[in-house]
Length: 429
Ligand SMILES: O=C(O)C1=C[C@@H](OP(=O)(O)O)[C@@H](O)[C@H](O)C1
Ligand SMILES: C=C(OP(=O)(O)O)C(=O)O
Image 1 (cartoon, rainbow, N blue to C red):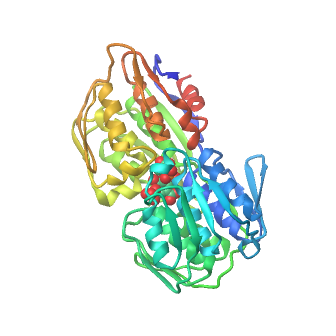
Image 2: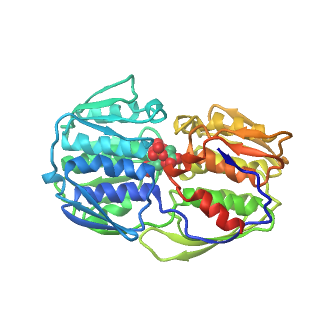
Image 3: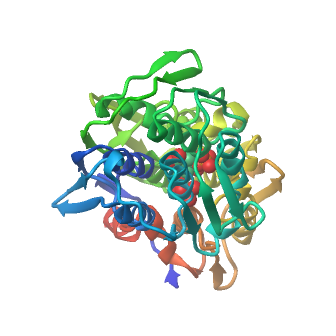
């Protein structure tokens, strides 16, 4: 339980938030595939990242933590140990499960994936179907965990057109092909996050891009690399919205990743009239210092399917911003939100309605009328539904809510942002 009743007189200060979760998963996995020592500077350390590391250790990969660096010391994919009857607990992490299913399918190393109650409800058919089409064989609980891969892929070459806007599905196939060392061509018309594609050349892997398609020629071997992980825009998003809607705030967010496949929230908040300034920095992935100043004259906007992959994890906090904007915000094409750590469409709607927001759920998003004054008449329990992004959104909502609200499950923030409440304290003082 975390009481969220605060007397807030603005949020102030600078913050280098947690490092990017997607980039850290990928750096750990590619580092494990390469023989030698890969250095990952400023990785995220969180429960989901622990799931990825725990799954790679049985292959003979060591992770050495030194200050703000993880050294990935690996025998390389050609020399991985091949333990029998491997059962891997992926905790709460969809990314770990789907990306590593691709790795194990490429290795042709049988494995069973299990996970927590939330992960066990999430759809895995989306990776079973394409990997099975490449010759892999799976047993699952009707498309859910426990998921057993009986044998890996054998098709070559691989030609895959991504059928849904999921980077995790794209990466399952990409990694299967890379590890099996077969020529792999992938078309991503949804423009899902491209961190793996950006990072592969650093590991010595050549890609050829043609429009929405990229090709990785077979038989390439990864070499170890040095990767620096920027701050996660999906975490910074909470402060971008908090700094906008809490009166008298000025927040500086340092070294935030603004890769264009991820930065949709900046476009959306700017359309809504928020005051966001970017100071661009030079880095492997585009990065900026982001300054946010309160703006109480927000206006409604429309978000459609084309923009959704660039801000999918930010939609709960964007929905909160929309409750404070004048007019009707319509968010559509976001049906994927229903299959995240919880059904984020119903969770966001139910919890924000408790605070008096005018929000309704649709099958693929939300309709939100604003602005609404958020308040509760009596002490109210808010439920993060075990989902880190819902818990953090509600904690920001509480900053502008009149009355006494308590979050029943604050610990979920540890999935992606273990220092969230500490950083909130820092910005309040
Ligand atoms: O590839 C990734 O690192 C992720 C992709 C997205 O999921 P989908 O690929 O299922 O959309 C996102 O929601 C998740 O937090 C991380
Ligand atoms: C959906 C998320 O992660 P994953 O799919 O890796 O569990 C998230 O972090 O919001």
